[in-house]
Picture (cartoon, rainbow, N blue to C red):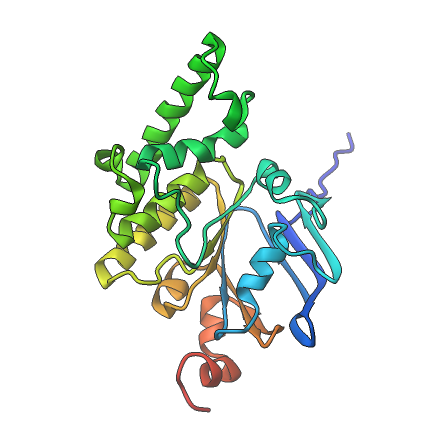
Length: 263
């Protein structure tokens, strides 16, 4: 009896190939090629202006790259609209917290849920029984996510009334509401104190345990090195280094340029 013992072909969750982006005469990204396997935390580091947020923006459809390809689950997503990319399973948070300040905490998360509903956000305005049932499911899901990030007791407050660290958690809960396979986090620890940063690290570990792949842009090197499986280093729009946290920490160019150590 002959059996097929060949291992299944490897397929990354996210793949960029020779992605470039310029703004006028400034080359923000130059031939960026990297892969993100399923189920890992991919760190992305580099100084201000290295191109990290620009890379997030081209992945999520906010910017159209000048050249190159971006594939997710083996499908090309370059040129797709933001809402289409979210529906495919990519969500993100922002360097500057972007919440609906006039809405309550739970309403912010419910907005994130509507990408997965049949009625959609505007359909929820009607009072049709089927829509009301769906709205009840959305509220229940939002409550689950608030409990997951530790904000269940704050659901009725205005999002603008939350302390800054809790606003970060709310933004993560809202991103999770779209049921992403890939979550892009843009400096989630910015503005957090040491205790909040430790709690954030624990939360990111819980998110990874759910099977969600993370790409983390973060200036807190301690957090990045602790939680990342792989790290990509950008320098002026180009890839400077890539490897495990241990390999990056021992890279002389990275140590000199980004981690405060001399050669």
